[in-house]
Image 1 (cartoon, rainbow, N blue to C red):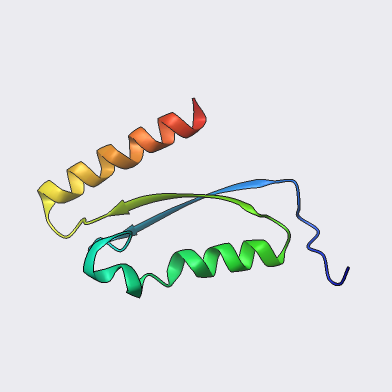
Image 2 (image 1 turned 30 degrees about the vertical axis):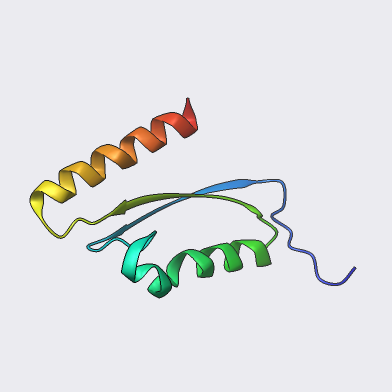
Length: 79
């Protein structure tokens, strides 16, 4: 079976923020953070990784919208 992470059976929530939008659009190929998080958590046995993005925060208006979207996602995830 090989190496097995000892933190299995857990779920992790990761909140990330960025000035630009990396989940889609022209910068999507530059999103190295999310695959890295999933790889690191997978290595220790955690395969259930929920990502909460606060992205596109490079202007005050965009930041307010991004925060609202992230809060809505948290509410949906945590019920």
